[in-house]
Length: 198
Image 1: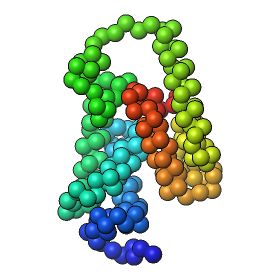
Image 2: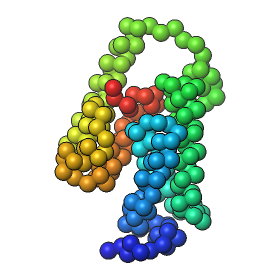
Image 3: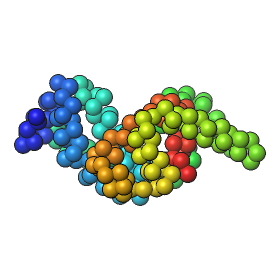
Image 4: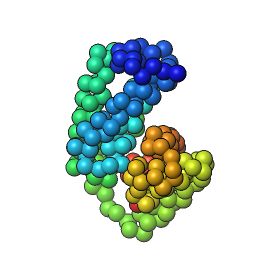
């Protein structure tokens, strides 16, 4: 059982030693504040949630390389930075998200070139993508899929989903993180907007 009175530096040290309970404790302490800061920039609940999850996932994945003096300052600064970048990306290219997908400079230039849109072809591609996403969702555990659909299809908040399913907000958070990671991995080179099911 993790001692909740441990300081942030003590928890960080435990995380470096692969202690998931320590990581969960820091997540519980700060995720809401990170979410609020991200929300100030992007004005979007789901996108703010995504930014929050990405920040904490990155901390866990890079736990052996990180040198954090103040965990609170680190995550809040990260939220500001990522929120600002998302907002700028939304203004410049509202339907395009190419960051960190490994595109070359030539591919990015090609993406940024004006294109002629064929409505029929776009409709077919959208249907194909929807079919692919549905197939990927069917591979998720039943509860995880249900939570994802409530969030994306019905635009339910985390609080609403937790109340509807009689589970904790943390469980909803974890299941959404798992579902998004599953879709991102499977659709790595698909435009990010495809993950936001309309």
